[in-house]
Length: 223
Image (tube, rainbow, N blue to C red; front, side, top):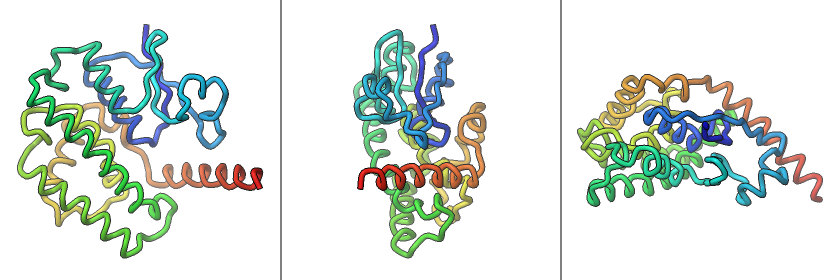
């Protein structure tokens, strides 16, 4: 019986889970949640996930949300010996560190790239935040093909989903050769990358426009 995943197309956390499932050959039944229609606030969804976030999975009645927890669960439950989430304590600790660090990367990029999502130019403050974030990633990755240096893990998949928008928006990554090599290398290596992560920036801007309209309407109704 396939696992149900409640997801949206453009969400990096959702795409990280989808890539993990692909890598582990786990069958997922994707149920799209239209945030612009408020489906994440529907009574049935809130019963399942009071935080009304995506992704959420339903594995035969077991409900779990938060992408990194889902990725860890899929590995532990369905592929406990997979190197995608190593069992050796020190190797796993490195993966967990990157998963947690990716939270700050996701937050920084979401904030700094927001103008691009809306079809505008980045401010100098946005550019500084973006460059500082990628500069540190470049230093941390170094010459490693994978972030932990010991093979593909869910840390790579999570960070790849977070940073894949930089390819879509054609950001200049030439000052960060280590990061650029890692990003382009993984995007070319993984056979499912395009299926999950490739779309046009116009699609994202259209989605963001719908989301903005939804929140404005919600705010107007509350006044």
